[in-house]
Image (cartoon, rainbow, N blue to C red):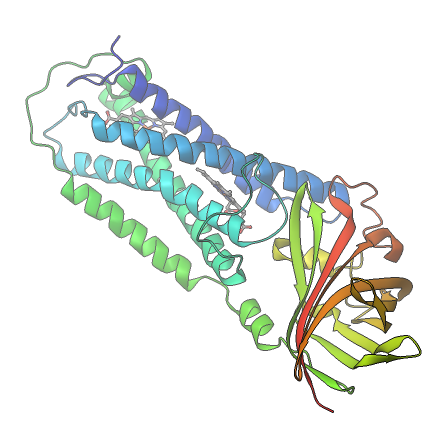
Length: 399
Ligand code: HEM
Ligand code: HEM
């Protein structure tokens, strides 16, 4: 049995590639569909859904890498002659379906991977090579586009697999020829009259199908949430002698073993600060945070629910602190009221003042249990206890 294809048979390498990719894809497909439809109303249900997605993604990436190797191999190999070279329309259809399948082997997992890399959170890929992709920004827009693309492309692939399998079964059961057995067992098919292989029409048809699919995915990409979040990002000043010009309020937490970062788009800071301390204080700060402006990748909805930030009952969180000097810079020493619970919090920060502009940067690690957050997530397997809050801002002196 030859490793290479011949004019009348598929070699062992081609057949191994074919059936292994088929196995991975036919496993990834139902996993994706089931995982997508599973509920996530309890901690256990969410953890199970995330586990299924992790397996789906990991198998999908294995299919992608194998698919690439398979395509390289197919480029170097001859294709056995068709068994019915006279049936031109059937050959064109089979060829177009094969091309759609080849394109799908790359486009389907890649769109899923880009979606995963662009959105922070939820189910990690089960491997040690990181969760991001070069050139793919963490962006809601990119994630929404890639998500819609993955959805449409999986439908194209599913349809192509259906036609492909129906074709193989038709050959086997109706034509009773060797098409299926030569892919299954490497059987050498009977000799056929020579023919000129036509790839242009099937390839053009497959590309057209994919371009139409990409256009459809673009049209169905949801944009509203992104526009709302971007348009309302505000940090108005309430009073005080410094006005925030720009800033970020982020937090990160380990989720399913991978770090996810969230942020609040809307918050207001009332800063009173003087360089020379009086009675050991440089001033005071009050930050009011609009909890509904929270986003944390694919788990934004869960984070907003009563289990976590409970934005419906507690639309604002407040941090009130005195600004004190410490050897490393400053500390905002006060309390944070979150979910209606007040806890002492000391946020160390550095400050660079040049003229009337100040750049502030600080981080503090909180424990979500202090605010009774994620009560049903009793251990750190799904959501870590430590939440690292990072604040950066540029403010301008006004008085
Ligand atoms: C599910 C994922 C599958 C993918 C991505 C896939 C992909 C492909 C591709 C790209 C080819 C063309 C190979 C070439 O260039 O010569 C091919 C050939 C073939 N596939 Fe599949 N296939 C899948 C599943 C199946 C299944 C489930 C069957 C059987 C029921 C099947 C039966 C065949 C047969 C018989 C051929 C040879 C056709 C010929 O002689 O030209 N495939 N497959
Ligand atoms: C050949 C490989 C793959 C196949 C066949 C596949 C197939 C699917 C299917 C059928 C769905 C469900 C769509 C629906 O509900 O109608 C899905 C969803 C999903 N897949 Fe894949 N997938 C593959 C690879 C990947 C990879 C590599 C990743 C990420 C690294 C990924 C991430 C996702 C995500 C995040 C969803 C849910 C999308 C959403 O919430 O809208 N997939 N996939």
